[in-house]
Image 1 (cartoon, rainbow, N blue to C red):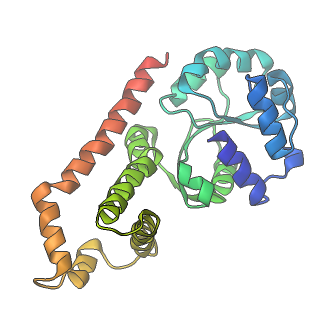
Image 2: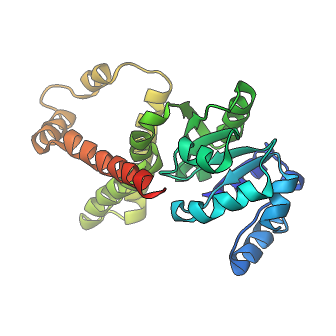
Length: 257
């Protein structure tokens, strides 16, 4: 996800390469990133010293050993954006003190400029910092600000959501392939259908109930499909999928101490 953010910021000119520094523990991965982005890897200490804004893009399990290093290196006057699932604002405050922190939960669709990023500002993140975060993530798609109490559910909806959509699209495409339609063409049909339906809602179209009435004419194909969806309780089943991801996010918050 860190690489997606870097590519998006550079591609949109929101941040120039000359303004970017990065640090990776794995020397081989650091060299690969240097070749891809044309940016030289630096030490963690140098990155902190020369940076005003730090993106923390590591696995949650790596946060415990890393945050004391950040604190020792001196975070006074610095701002932090964390994309770590499970790492709460109070967790950062325990290690870093009154440092401006914003939790961000982007998703993989940011790679295509259609991402959904959830932002939760900490108590020391002023409006200028929040505005900066919105601007940076806007180059990857849309942003929504939520209080931290809703972050677990937001992770289930948006953070993990693309994976669930991939599974649904693959199932549709495989059904068509089993009937003789080329898988790639079937996947294109299903993907564009999902994209088009979502764009209608994002543009502030009619309420979903009205849209369904417009499409589902009596005794038609859509009505037959919707009837089967209700019989299978697909809406409720998908809610359970999202809730499972949200529960895991809550568990991770308890595991990160």
